[in-house]
Image (cartoon, rainbow, N blue to C red):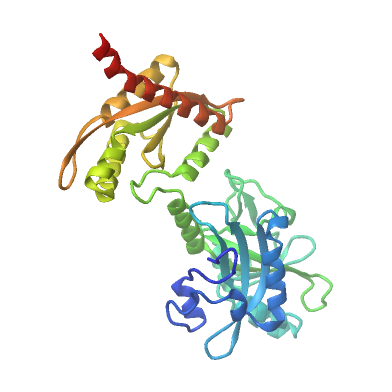
Length: 390
Protein backbone atom coordinates (compact mmCIF):
# COMPACT_ATOMS: atom_id res chain seq x y z
CA UNK A 1 0.00 0.00 0.00
CA UNK A 2 1.48 3.35 -1.11
CA UNK A 3 1.11 6.80 0.38
CA UNK A 4 -0.88 8.62 -2.35
CA UNK A 5 1.22 11.79 -2.26
CA UNK A 6 4.79 10.47 -1.85
CA UNK A 7 4.38 6.95 -3.32
CA UNK A 8 6.29 5.62 -0.35
CA UNK A 9 5.38 2.18 0.94
CA UNK A 10 3.03 2.15 3.95
CA UNK A 11 2.69 -1.61 4.20
CA UNK A 12 4.06 -4.68 2.42
CA UNK A 13 3.11 -8.31 2.97
CA UNK A 14 5.55 -10.80 4.48
CA UNK A 15 5.35 -12.82 1.25
CA UNK A 16 6.93 -9.97 -0.71
CA UNK A 17 9.75 -9.94 1.81
CA UNK A 18 10.27 -13.66 1.26
CA UNK A 19 10.36 -13.24 -2.52
CA UNK A 20 12.93 -10.44 -2.34
CA UNK A 21 14.87 -11.82 0.68
CA UNK A 22 14.05 -8.80 2.84
CA UNK A 23 13.27 -8.66 6.56
CA UNK A 24 9.73 -7.78 7.72
CA UNK A 25 9.30 -4.02 7.91
CA UNK A 26 12.22 -3.29 5.56
CA UNK A 27 9.93 -1.90 2.84
CA UNK A 28 8.03 0.60 4.96
CA UNK A 29 8.56 4.30 4.13
CA UNK A 30 10.74 3.49 1.10
CA UNK A 31 9.73 4.86 -2.32
CA UNK A 32 8.43 2.04 -4.50
CA UNK A 33 10.57 3.37 -7.36
CA UNK A 34 13.73 2.67 -5.32
CA UNK A 35 12.98 -1.07 -5.52
CA UNK A 36 12.40 -1.08 -9.26
CA UNK A 37 14.94 -1.81 -11.99
CA UNK A 38 16.06 1.55 -13.50
CA UNK A 39 14.76 0.51 -16.94
CA UNK A 40 11.26 0.01 -15.46
CA UNK A 41 11.10 3.03 -13.11
CA UNK A 42 9.85 5.36 -15.84
CA UNK A 43 6.96 3.03 -16.70
CA UNK A 44 6.01 2.78 -13.02
CA UNK A 45 6.02 6.54 -12.54
CA UNK A 46 3.94 7.03 -15.68
CA UNK A 47 1.42 4.43 -14.48
CA UNK A 48 1.12 6.08 -11.05
CA UNK A 49 0.68 9.50 -12.62
CA UNK A 50 -2.02 8.28 -15.01
CA UNK A 51 -4.24 6.49 -12.48
CA UNK A 52 -6.78 9.31 -12.57
CA UNK A 53 -7.07 9.07 -16.36
CA UNK A 54 -7.24 5.28 -16.50
CA UNK A 55 -10.32 4.66 -14.37
CA UNK A 56 -8.26 4.09 -11.24
CA UNK A 57 -6.56 0.87 -12.40
CA UNK A 58 -3.34 0.14 -14.28
CA UNK A 59 -1.48 -3.10 -14.96
CA UNK A 60 2.25 -3.08 -15.76
CA UNK A 61 5.15 -5.51 -15.66
CA UNK A 62 8.35 -4.55 -13.90
CA UNK A 63 11.42 -5.95 -12.18
CA UNK A 64 11.99 -5.60 -8.44
CA UNK A 65 15.42 -5.87 -6.86
CA UNK A 66 16.07 -8.64 -4.33
CA UNK A 67 18.48 -8.36 -1.42
CA UNK A 68 21.42 -9.85 -3.35
CA UNK A 69 20.99 -7.51 -6.31
CA UNK A 70 19.05 -9.99 -8.45
CA UNK A 71 15.76 -8.91 -9.96
CA UNK A 72 12.37 -10.65 -10.19
CA UNK A 73 9.71 -9.93 -12.75
CA UNK A 74 6.39 -8.89 -11.24
CA UNK A 75 3.01 -8.00 -12.62
CA UNK A 76 1.81 -4.92 -10.73
CA UNK A 77 -1.90 -4.07 -10.58
CA UNK A 78 -2.21 -0.46 -9.39
CA UNK A 79 -5.60 0.42 -7.88
CA UNK A 80 -6.59 3.93 -6.81
CA UNK A 81 -8.19 3.69 -3.37
CA UNK A 82 -7.30 7.22 -2.28
CA UNK A 83 -10.94 8.25 -1.94
CA UNK A 84 -11.96 5.15 -0.01
CA UNK A 85 -11.94 6.19 3.68
CA UNK A 86 -11.18 2.62 4.73
CA UNK A 87 -8.00 2.47 2.62
CA UNK A 88 -6.88 6.01 1.60
CA UNK A 89 -3.92 4.69 -0.37
CA UNK A 90 -2.78 3.38 -3.72
CA UNK A 91 -2.98 -0.41 -3.53
CA UNK A 92 -0.37 -2.36 -5.50
CA UNK A 93 -1.02 -6.08 -5.96
CA UNK A 94 2.18 -7.80 -7.08
CA UNK A 95 2.29 -11.19 -8.73
CA UNK A 96 5.53 -13.05 -9.31
CA UNK A 97 5.82 -13.70 -13.08
CA UNK A 98 9.51 -14.59 -13.13
CA UNK A 99 8.81 -18.14 -14.31
CA UNK A 100 6.44 -16.93 -16.99
CA UNK A 101 8.98 -14.40 -18.27
CA UNK A 102 11.66 -17.03 -18.47
CA UNK A 103 9.28 -19.31 -20.33
CA UNK A 104 8.37 -16.60 -22.80
CA UNK A 105 12.03 -15.98 -23.57
CA UNK A 106 12.62 -19.62 -24.43
CA UNK A 107 9.49 -20.45 -26.42
CA UNK A 108 11.24 -19.92 -29.75
CA UNK A 109 13.88 -22.55 -29.16
CA UNK A 110 13.74 -26.03 -30.60
CA UNK A 111 10.57 -28.15 -30.43
CA UNK A 112 12.19 -30.58 -28.01
CA UNK A 113 13.22 -27.81 -25.62
CA UNK A 114 9.78 -26.23 -26.08
CA UNK A 115 7.97 -29.42 -25.08
CA UNK A 116 10.27 -30.08 -22.13
CA UNK A 117 9.80 -26.54 -20.88
CA UNK A 118 6.01 -26.60 -21.08
CA UNK A 119 5.85 -30.09 -19.63
CA UNK A 120 7.66 -28.96 -16.47
CA UNK A 121 5.72 -25.78 -15.78
CA UNK A 122 4.23 -26.08 -12.31
CA UNK A 123 0.57 -25.71 -13.16
CA UNK A 124 0.31 -27.00 -16.70
CA UNK A 125 0.42 -25.89 -20.32
CA UNK A 126 -1.45 -26.51 -23.57
CA UNK A 127 -0.80 -25.77 -27.22
CA UNK A 128 -3.97 -25.43 -29.30
CA UNK A 129 -3.94 -25.16 -33.11
CA UNK A 130 -6.01 -22.78 -35.26
CA UNK A 131 -8.86 -25.31 -35.38
CA UNK A 132 -9.10 -25.44 -31.59
CA UNK A 133 -7.51 -28.88 -31.28
CA UNK A 134 -4.91 -29.69 -28.62
CA UNK A 135 -1.46 -30.22 -30.16
CA UNK A 136 0.39 -30.57 -26.86
CA UNK A 137 -0.59 -30.98 -23.21
CA UNK A 138 1.63 -31.31 -20.18
CA UNK A 139 0.93 -33.99 -17.58
CA UNK A 140 -0.18 -31.33 -15.12
CA UNK A 141 -2.58 -29.80 -17.67
CA UNK A 142 -4.18 -33.21 -18.17
CA UNK A 143 -4.61 -33.54 -14.39
CA UNK A 144 -6.28 -30.13 -14.26
CA UNK A 145 -8.69 -31.29 -16.96
CA UNK A 146 -9.33 -34.60 -15.26
CA UNK A 147 -8.30 -36.67 -18.30
CA UNK A 148 -5.29 -38.62 -19.56
CA UNK A 149 -3.11 -37.02 -22.20
CA UNK A 150 -4.04 -39.59 -24.86
CA UNK A 151 -7.68 -38.55 -24.51
CA UNK A 152 -6.76 -34.90 -24.93
CA UNK A 153 -4.16 -34.49 -27.68
CA UNK A 154 -5.68 -34.29 -31.14
CA UNK A 155 -9.14 -33.38 -29.85
CA UNK A 156 -10.94 -30.07 -29.53
CA UNK A 157 -10.01 -28.35 -26.27
CA UNK A 158 -12.68 -29.21 -23.67
CA UNK A 159 -13.96 -25.77 -22.77
CA UNK A 160 -17.35 -25.57 -21.05
CA UNK A 161 -19.60 -22.80 -19.80
CA UNK A 162 -20.70 -23.03 -16.17
CA UNK A 163 -24.08 -21.79 -14.90
CA UNK A 164 -22.42 -18.80 -13.21
CA UNK A 165 -20.98 -17.66 -16.55
CA UNK A 166 -17.38 -18.69 -15.88
CA UNK A 167 -15.45 -20.92 -18.27
CA UNK A 168 -14.28 -24.34 -17.12
CA UNK A 169 -11.65 -26.71 -18.46
CA UNK A 170 -13.89 -29.74 -18.22
CA UNK A 171 -15.16 -32.76 -20.14
CA UNK A 172 -18.52 -32.64 -18.33
CA UNK A 173 -21.11 -33.42 -21.04
CA UNK A 174 -23.83 -31.64 -19.06
CA UNK A 175 -22.13 -28.27 -19.58
CA UNK A 176 -22.38 -26.50 -22.98
CA UNK A 177 -19.21 -26.24 -25.04
CA UNK A 178 -17.61 -22.91 -25.86
CA UNK A 179 -14.87 -21.85 -28.26
CA UNK A 180 -11.40 -20.37 -27.80
CA UNK A 181 -12.92 -16.97 -28.44
CA UNK A 182 -14.79 -17.26 -25.15
CA UNK A 183 -11.63 -17.79 -23.10
CA UNK A 184 -11.24 -15.44 -20.15
CA UNK A 185 -8.17 -14.55 -18.08
CA UNK A 186 -9.27 -16.96 -15.36
CA UNK A 187 -10.73 -20.43 -15.73
CA UNK A 188 -11.98 -23.26 -13.52
CA UNK A 189 -10.33 -26.69 -13.55
CA UNK A 190 -11.90 -30.13 -13.27
CA UNK A 191 -11.53 -30.11 -9.46
CA UNK A 192 -13.06 -26.66 -9.06
CA UNK A 193 -9.78 -24.83 -8.50
CA UNK A 194 -9.16 -21.54 -10.31
CA UNK A 195 -6.35 -21.01 -12.81
CA UNK A 196 -5.01 -17.90 -14.47
CA UNK A 197 -4.41 -18.23 -18.19
CA UNK A 198 -1.43 -16.66 -19.89
CA UNK A 199 -1.84 -16.98 -23.65
CA UNK A 200 0.48 -16.26 -26.52
CA UNK A 201 -0.36 -16.76 -30.19
CA UNK A 202 2.64 -18.46 -31.82
CA UNK A 203 0.73 -19.69 -34.85
CA UNK A 204 3.33 -18.19 -37.18
CA UNK A 205 6.18 -20.00 -35.44
CA UNK A 206 6.96 -23.23 -37.32
CA UNK A 207 8.00 -24.95 -34.09
CA UNK A 208 4.90 -24.07 -32.07
CA UNK A 209 2.22 -23.48 -34.71
CA UNK A 210 -0.53 -22.70 -32.25
CA UNK A 211 -1.81 -20.87 -29.22
CA UNK A 212 0.26 -21.48 -26.09
CA UNK A 213 -1.78 -21.49 -22.88
CA UNK A 214 0.04 -21.58 -19.55
CA UNK A 215 -2.05 -22.21 -16.44
CA UNK A 216 -1.23 -20.99 -12.96
CA UNK A 217 -3.20 -22.00 -9.87
CA UNK A 218 -4.63 -18.84 -8.26
CA UNK A 219 -7.19 -20.45 -5.97
CA UNK A 220 -5.50 -19.30 -2.77
CA UNK A 221 -4.87 -15.85 -4.22
CA UNK A 222 -8.56 -15.47 -5.05
CA UNK A 223 -9.45 -16.52 -1.51
CA UNK A 224 -7.01 -13.99 -0.08
CA UNK A 225 -8.49 -11.24 -2.25
CA UNK A 226 -12.02 -12.17 -1.18
CA UNK A 227 -10.92 -12.19 2.46
CA UNK A 228 -9.31 -8.76 2.10
CA UNK A 229 -12.40 -7.42 0.36
CA UNK A 230 -14.53 -8.84 3.16
CA UNK A 231 -12.36 -7.23 5.83
CA UNK A 232 -12.49 -3.85 4.07
CA UNK A 233 -16.29 -3.98 4.23
CA UNK A 234 -16.49 -4.58 8.00
CA UNK A 235 -16.60 -2.10 10.87
CA UNK A 236 -13.59 -2.98 13.02
CA UNK A 237 -15.26 -2.04 16.30
CA UNK A 238 -18.61 -3.88 16.03
CA UNK A 239 -18.02 -6.50 13.35
CA UNK A 240 -21.04 -5.17 11.44
CA UNK A 241 -20.79 -3.95 7.87
CA UNK A 242 -19.32 -0.48 7.40
CA UNK A 243 -20.80 2.09 5.00
CA UNK A 244 -18.92 0.64 2.03
CA UNK A 245 -20.05 -2.92 2.74
CA UNK A 246 -23.62 -1.77 3.37
CA UNK A 247 -23.81 0.14 0.09
CA UNK A 248 -22.45 -2.80 -1.89
CA UNK A 249 -24.86 -5.31 -0.33
CA UNK A 250 -27.88 -3.06 -0.78
CA UNK A 251 -26.90 -2.19 -4.37
CA UNK A 252 -26.67 -5.88 -5.22
CA UNK A 253 -30.16 -6.53 -3.83
CA UNK A 254 -31.57 -3.55 -5.71
CA UNK A 255 -30.00 -4.72 -8.97
CA UNK A 256 -31.73 -8.06 -8.39
CA UNK A 257 -35.05 -6.20 -8.41
CA UNK A 258 -35.73 -5.94 -4.67
CA UNK A 259 -37.21 -2.99 -2.79
CA UNK A 260 -35.95 -2.58 0.76
CA UNK A 261 -36.98 -0.57 3.80
CA UNK A 262 -34.22 1.27 5.65
CA UNK A 263 -34.35 1.67 9.42
CA UNK A 264 -31.96 4.43 10.52
CA UNK A 265 -30.99 4.29 14.23
CA UNK A 266 -29.16 6.86 16.34
CA UNK A 267 -28.30 6.46 20.03
CA UNK A 268 -29.49 9.11 22.48
CA UNK A 269 -27.10 9.48 25.39
CA UNK A 270 -24.00 8.15 23.67
CA UNK A 271 -22.12 11.45 24.00
CA UNK A 272 -22.84 11.52 27.72
CA UNK A 273 -21.34 8.04 28.08
CA UNK A 274 -18.18 9.18 26.30
CA UNK A 275 -17.94 12.42 28.28
CA UNK A 276 -18.65 10.81 31.66
CA UNK A 277 -16.96 7.42 31.41
CA UNK A 278 -14.42 7.87 28.60
CA UNK A 279 -14.10 6.64 25.02
CA UNK A 280 -13.31 3.11 26.14
CA UNK A 281 -16.76 2.86 27.68
CA UNK A 282 -18.24 4.41 24.54
CA UNK A 283 -16.57 1.78 22.36
CA UNK A 284 -17.77 -0.95 24.71
CA UNK A 285 -21.33 0.39 24.40
CA UNK A 286 -21.14 0.44 20.60
CA UNK A 287 -19.95 -3.18 20.53
CA UNK A 288 -22.86 -4.23 22.75
CA UNK A 289 -25.32 -2.27 20.61
CA UNK A 290 -23.96 -4.10 17.56
CA UNK A 291 -24.51 -7.45 19.29
CA UNK A 292 -28.10 -6.59 20.19
CA UNK A 293 -28.75 -5.37 16.68
CA UNK A 294 -27.55 -8.64 15.17
CA UNK A 295 -29.76 -10.62 17.55
CA UNK A 296 -32.81 -8.48 16.70
CA UNK A 297 -32.50 -8.87 12.91
CA UNK A 298 -33.07 -11.69 10.45
CA UNK A 299 -30.31 -13.52 8.52
CA UNK A 300 -31.18 -11.78 5.24
CA UNK A 301 -31.32 -8.28 6.78
CA UNK A 302 -28.37 -6.02 5.96
CA UNK A 303 -27.01 -4.53 9.19
CA UNK A 304 -24.33 -1.83 9.37
CA UNK A 305 -22.72 0.83 11.49
CA UNK A 306 -22.38 3.94 9.34
CA UNK A 307 -20.12 5.74 11.81
CA UNK A 308 -20.23 7.24 15.28
CA UNK A 309 -23.40 6.06 16.98
CA UNK A 310 -25.43 5.71 13.76
CA UNK A 311 -26.66 2.30 12.64
CA UNK A 312 -28.85 1.21 9.74
CA UNK A 313 -30.77 -1.92 8.79
CA UNK A 314 -32.05 -2.73 5.29
CA UNK A 315 -34.82 -5.31 5.27
CA UNK A 316 -37.39 -6.76 2.91
CA UNK A 317 -40.87 -5.96 4.20
CA UNK A 318 -44.13 -6.25 2.34
CA UNK A 319 -45.89 -3.10 3.58
CA UNK A 320 -45.74 -0.11 5.92
CA UNK A 321 -47.04 -2.23 8.80
CA UNK A 322 -44.09 -4.58 8.42
CA UNK A 323 -41.78 -1.57 8.27
CA UNK A 324 -43.21 -0.07 11.46
CA UNK A 325 -42.94 -3.39 13.25
CA UNK A 326 -39.30 -3.64 12.18
CA UNK A 327 -38.47 -0.16 13.48
CA UNK A 328 -40.32 -0.70 16.77
CA UNK A 329 -38.58 -4.03 17.30
CA UNK A 330 -35.13 -2.51 16.72
CA UNK A 331 -35.82 0.51 18.93
CA UNK A 332 -36.97 -1.71 21.79
CA UNK A 333 -33.97 -4.01 21.37
CA UNK A 334 -31.42 -1.19 21.53
CA UNK A 335 -33.02 1.05 24.18
CA UNK A 336 -32.52 0.58 27.86
CA UNK A 337 -29.73 -0.37 30.24
CA UNK A 338 -26.32 -1.72 29.25
CA UNK A 339 -23.94 -3.28 31.73
CA UNK A 340 -20.48 -2.22 30.59
CA UNK A 341 -17.24 -3.44 32.09
CA UNK A 342 -17.12 -0.91 34.92
CA UNK A 343 -20.49 0.83 34.91
CA UNK A 344 -24.13 0.57 33.97
CA UNK A 345 -25.54 3.08 31.46
CA UNK A 346 -28.87 3.74 29.79
CA UNK A 347 -29.54 4.95 26.25
CA UNK A 348 -32.56 5.41 24.04
CA UNK A 349 -32.87 5.35 20.27
CA UNK A 350 -34.12 7.83 17.66
CA UNK A 351 -35.33 6.22 14.44
CA UNK A 352 -35.97 7.18 10.85
CA UNK A 353 -37.04 5.21 7.84
CA UNK A 354 -37.15 5.29 4.05
CA UNK A 355 -37.53 2.98 1.10
CA UNK A 356 -34.91 2.14 -1.53
CA UNK A 357 -35.14 0.36 -4.86
CA UNK A 358 -36.68 0.98 -8.26
CA UNK A 359 -36.09 4.65 -9.11
CA UNK A 360 -35.05 5.61 -5.58
CA UNK A 361 -31.23 5.86 -5.26
CA UNK A 362 -29.61 4.62 -2.07
CA UNK A 363 -27.99 7.98 -1.30
CA UNK A 364 -31.38 9.72 -1.45
CA UNK A 365 -33.00 7.03 0.69
CA UNK A 366 -30.31 7.36 3.36
CA UNK A 367 -30.74 11.14 3.37
CA UNK A 368 -34.51 10.85 3.85
CA UNK A 369 -34.09 8.29 6.65
CA UNK A 370 -31.49 10.52 8.32
CA UNK A 371 -33.81 13.56 8.17
CA UNK A 372 -36.69 11.56 9.66
CA UNK A 373 -34.41 10.27 12.38
CA UNK A 374 -33.43 13.83 13.38
CA UNK A 375 -37.08 14.88 13.33
CA UNK A 376 -37.80 11.95 15.66
CA UNK A 377 -34.90 13.01 17.90
CA UNK A 378 -36.28 16.57 18.15
CA UNK A 379 -39.75 15.23 18.94
CA UNK A 380 -38.35 13.04 21.71
CA UNK A 381 -36.44 15.99 23.16
CA UNK A 382 -39.63 18.09 23.23
CA UNK A 383 -41.66 15.52 25.17
CA UNK A 384 -40.30 16.35 28.65
CA UNK A 385 -41.03 20.06 28.09
CA UNK A 386 -44.59 19.33 26.97
CA UNK A 387 -45.17 17.15 30.02
CA UNK A 388 -43.71 19.83 32.30
CA UNK A 389 -45.90 22.52 30.74
CA UNK A 390 -48.96 20.29 31.18
